[in-house]
Length: 193
Image (tube, rainbow, N blue to C red; front, side, top):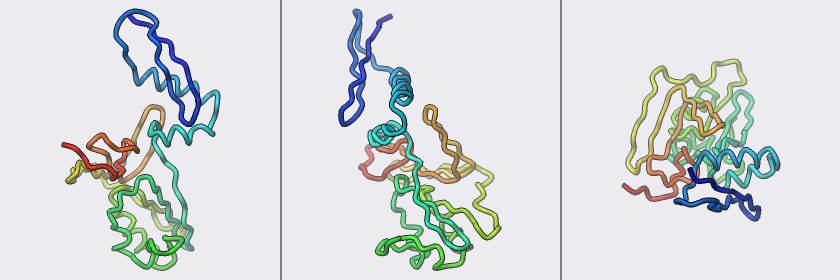
């Protein structure tokens, strides 16, 4: 078995340099890399988490909240693939030419919730503040492969990436392997067959 030494270098981005310690081929293990990232996390804390997310090593679960009287809308910008179900469904609520672009009080909370549930990527979520039930996952999990290798999945979903876990009802997953926001599709690359 070959042994390797790893050194952590900090600059604009963290990087692990592999130095061969004994004979044999160079190999780089994702498990070793993740173990080193765990050590980095313990040493340097949350400040460097942003760098790791920028490099696509961690899932992005950050969102912006738009408050309304009866409903609160959450928008995960990194998950949005611009399917436009929101802007076509309720243009008075979801208007990209305005700031803020989401105005939850411009329609009934039931209508806002219905349109959000059409979002295939799960970029939009909501919390009801009027006592009504929130979004319920559909009983059966479905996977719909779209042209361009985008996979729309719906159901009671738990997505795990290493030690990270995200619970959601809808997602657009990368099927081509070129996304910078894996496992989610970022809709920025031409997918290759």
